[in-house]
Amino acid sequence: MTKKTLAILVAFGALLAASALAGQRLEGWFDYEHCAYCRAWAAQPGLVAHSHDEAHELSDGIVWVTTIDNGYEDAFAKALKAEDSVTAELNAGKDLPLCRYCATIGDLAHEGARIEAVPCHSALVTIYSSADTSVVRQLREFGVTGTAKIAQANAGYLSRHQSAH
Image (tube, rainbow, N blue to C red):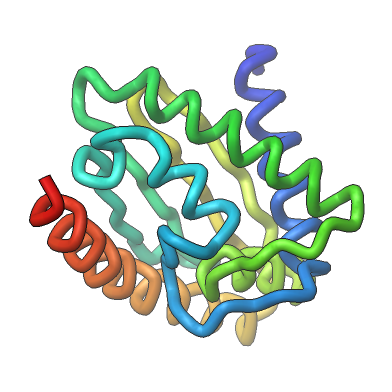
């Protein structure tokens, strides 16, 4: 495991712990204007338009794949670094708003889901798994709902921001 991989896995684990403890939960999924993590993503010009998410069922959970178009790898890295700052603030006790997606990741971890993130040059592959069949069912629902909601959120975000230019 490279140092970069380890750093991202440690940060992802901190996200899980922090998101489960966050006091301010937002109603929407993927709220690019209000969620502390989503704002970090949207702050990188073009990243929302040039990232793509999909989820696939595994025997014991799901695999969530985020791919980044060529030329946006630096923006992707900056977004992940900004998310690390959000995690640090949450761990320090700051009450930050989190969308349902970001908060649900922490909830799933506390339900017993094992989460492993594998960063690649232009992708992040995250495996959510569990031996508990009820958690596996929750993970699969999360994958279906999450991918549908991110498509809606991205379309709305891009519509609002492209018409402003």
